[in-house]
Image (cartoon, rainbow, N blue to C red):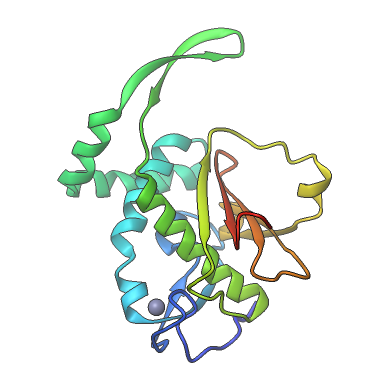
Length: 212
Ligand SMILES: [Zn+2]
């Protein structure tokens, strides 16, 4: 699928677009087979400034999903693990909140890891991704004044509801990421996005006023 063209950065909606940016971030797809990724026109400030955020969030996603298939294994071994070895600040903020917790799995009690994900970084990464994909699918730049709110979901949402079944479904990176989205016809600034990575990490994003 070819992205629509724009002279203006589709992320900030202000500066001239002189690069292309991957949405979702390219580093989220380490090890993904047939990784046909999506790109959109972006300025170098939005594009280059984002890679550190992307790596941090990739680390948290990778810790959460674990090594459940070759692609998620590569995501950790070739990506997240290298990041955490290199970034002392990320390491200390992860360790500051990480703790072992009891989890119930199939009737048995086991141990899992609980930790806080930095919300502002998470918000930045998913806002950028959503502004990019919004343009990718509509050819329209979401105005910088339109709010974009990202939330990490604790578990798998109920996908079997009428509202969610009506959403468009897109698969990228050989299935490493599936996202669903819907845009309100009469209020095109209002849209909803559900992202899943390796069927194990879920994010919900809204654009537009809270009321819509
Ligand atoms: Zn920009």
